[in-house]
Length: 311
Image (cartoon, rainbow, N blue to C red; front, top):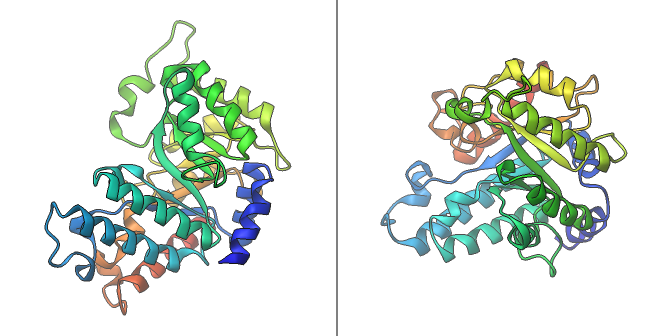
């Protein structure tokens, strides 16, 4: 643990996307694992006898589940992506559990991308960045990156980006999300002929180009759903300096072939997130013969890695 902490401290001084690329190269995959704990889907050993409003026991079971998942996937993938909402719903006890899960992931040598979709204006935006991005003791949560909402405008993102640069951290702004309803607003036509998501993408690319590191990618990335393969090739062409975070692979229907266009010729440029398909793999008949639920997680992770490698 001490060795990992020292390595993490040294890595913090490096450019965020360079660190991410090196982690991807070290593990040989762009797959990351989402941590989305849900009480009714936890293995029976972690949820039996827990009342649905016993926040302390639920928080403890979430922490135990996520740390076990981390133990399994740490040798296999470069990063995990905790979804803060599943912890926030438990109140203060859930947030303590989230902090402990983040610490455990960092101690295991993983990068942590917190999926919080945060943002606001002025000093509030800066407070969000200070809360999640940076290194302890100056940062309470000490994540490597944070997902953010761009719809409050460029000034809010610039405030967060300035802090991220100073902290050696990254941001992933929503561009084209994986949900079917994303088209309602994100595909609205503008007077200049572009769609709203395209205007946001162009602005993100302009900022990414200003913050590039060794591998040519900036620290402001883009969230683009794996369920929208028709947009990936378009956006990769127009966003050459922007690193992509691709949710929706696995349970939401995104396939390995769908994300191929997000990568450059060296297999870099994006991370592909899979959550439910991996962490609840024990429910899948495909892994019914696994020795235990942790073995099912390992098998599902290895299968996802192989699927991505094939394309």
